[in-house]
Amino acid sequence: MDIFQIVGLGLVVCLLAIILRYRKPPMAILLTMTAGIIIFIIMLPQITAVFNILRDLASQANVNMVYMGTILKIVGVAYIADFGSQICRDAGEGALASKIEFAAKIIVLVMAVPIIVAVLQSLIKLVP
Image 1: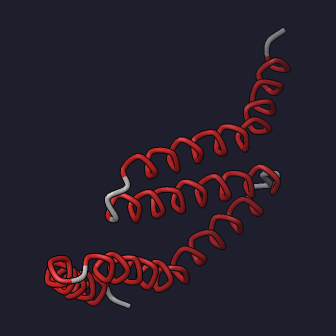
Image 2: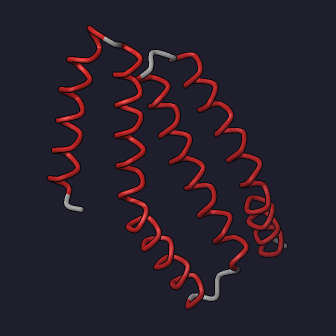
């Protein structure tokens, strides 16, 4: 789907949400959440293609796939957490959005530990 179609969908949903917000606020929230999920699903093939290209490049460069997989998972956690927190902000739940972002930061930190350890071990081997 072209960016113009995605932006068009977003603008139409935005206008409908503005109209619904005055009459039925819960329906407006559901409409925007549904549009966000649809846009996310539309973008999944592109995201998958990028991940496959990165995986192929890492394989050609003889990078340990465990590390590459971890990096891709970290990127995925970041995108999903941002998506979820934005939905919460759209629903007027800024505090919950902040908690989602905090949890994502902790998850990313935990997932990054093996990579940090590997980098530090490599540096220790280089320094006499």
